[in-house]
Length: 280
Image 1 (tube, rainbow, N blue to C red):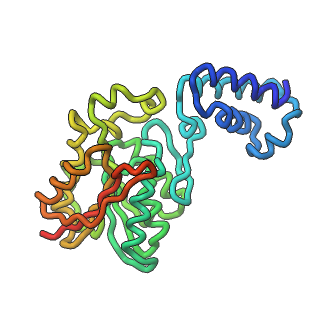
Image 2: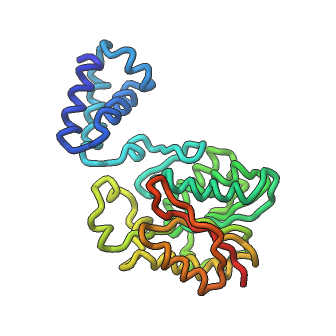
Image 3: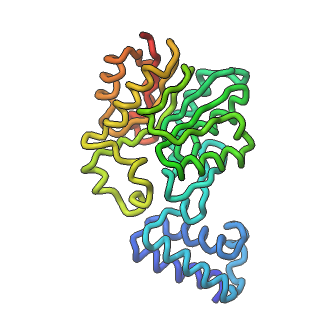
């Protein structure tokens, strides 16, 4: 088989499995199997494929057919300006989460010397992106999952900033830390009913990083209460929320002594990130 015939074979399998991005996914997976770039693959479609690479491609197609995300198959995902190692122990970084990084950068400058806390760090993509952009600052990253912490630390080493961020495997309820200038977080915020309706590709991701209890707000409540104690006065709490959670989250913040600076919409015009200041 040549590359074109192989792509047609893969396309038919993924299309029949209702993978919307079947063409792109096939090209990426075949390029991976052949150890070439996608661009190189597409200009050499008549090239013959040896048996070993063909079998590798077929195995990759079978994984994608079962809705395993491309990011987990490749073990990497781009976020902000950087690549991060990911596997099914951490949430796959989303474009909308980049809003947190963007807002932090607006509130600081290159030479800012701030202490950041990332609650529920996962792959470490938020805190590591911030520290890469603000090299005079330092960070602390918490996660309840030891495997997630190991991945985040590996990402810190890959980006040569492992000495700038401290990683702690702990439930935030038990964490007694310093006073921070900024707390950032993408907490679990999907409610129990919605979680059960999620597509198979999302269900590959860790349950603990997605589900936020019956109303989806249990981890957000915990985040706000802990931030009240962990932030310096006038410190910023910047976090992601789910659909239809803005009013509830704002009320919780106001009750706990926070001023609401701004609510940022995502690319679908859904309120997604809240920027708040501890004023009491």
